[in-house]
Image 1 (cartoon, rainbow, N blue to C red):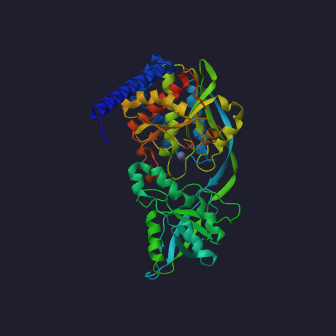
Image 2 (image 1 turned 120 degrees about the horizontal axis):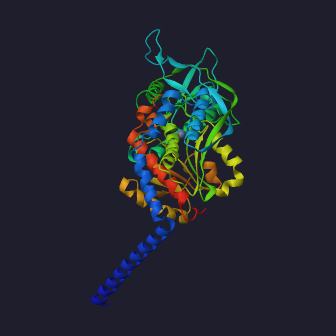
Image 3 (image 1 turned 90 degrees about the horizontal axis):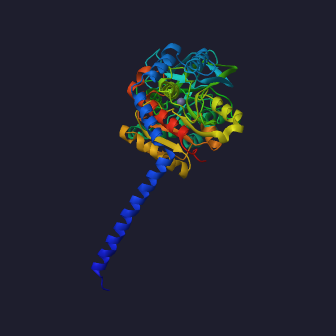
Length: 485
Ligand SMILES: [Zn+2]
């Protein structure tokens, strides 16, 4: 076989030329589309919003008030109610249409929580070893004087199953699965969290089915300062309700070490109480659209937090970012074509009742919900945003990413799942959901601990998030055509 190299080269050149022409055609087509969807005036306003956000401390001041003046905001608590009133008043002050939408929420109150090892190999006479732990939200109590029994350590549900009822009944199970810090350090902290949190969520009932009298989980988080991480879980209908707590990673290691040498007995006292469900609220604040007031873009975060820290990262930041969107648009005298609706959700942490209630009570207007944005992964530097949206909608969002490129926030990711727990019921009803892509490598070091406090927020990075979310919400509210379903 002979090869005509000259004609091959000509062919290659022609192909290259065609490719270049088609790239040029695509980019021209894109520019035309961008100009149709995003009028030059809109692009200018997006830039104006972005730079105004970067030089504003409004979000930080709001967050500081929520964390430092009001404090922890567990559903049903007096502080949660105070936070509802505060955000509503602040949004009214800005001139938004504000209403409170009622949500019935769990009202669980943490009691005392102590534990000590009372028997282990090598124990000095008349001593115990303190174990640092915290009750999981919703846990039932131990007897007032505590319970004392042997601890069984397992690394997985499979290992628990292999022990069987005979070796588990009457004992405390410790689920000792590790949070993968390497994964978190490489930017996959949420994946590390999802892997480990399965034991917090389903561990108590799995242990109870085999006759365990209490369930402990190795704290789901990446820090090493002997801080326990609380969190929610659900009792399954087919298992007895047993007390459940999270131990620090250090104490999980200690128990596992000693249990490998011989029997370890623990004295555990937890005295939480579950009170009747309480009336609380989602705060809904509308900045009415000038052309399509019935069409809504939600910007949101959840107002409730766990009770150990002050919920700065989780998720006071998200609420403050959403509040800033409204404040900036008002301050700059801009008027969105569609309604921008700020929502401070209630009860994300232990029930998701706010998000569920909203989707249910606004069922008839779901088609008018153009998009929902939620920030709920801290306030670290954002590199862009992710969207759970169809291909056409994704393409329509590209120019926003292009605009954000010069701020280092030009990444746009099409996700497979809902972006944000509170907006997941809307997502399930077909509403596109979006979130900033935040640096969350250290987020789970503090998440659900006493150390989730205001000092963990970098003001400049919080402002970057507020800038990104404001641009995103305003752009979507002003697109020539609504985002598709
Ligand atoms: Zn959260």
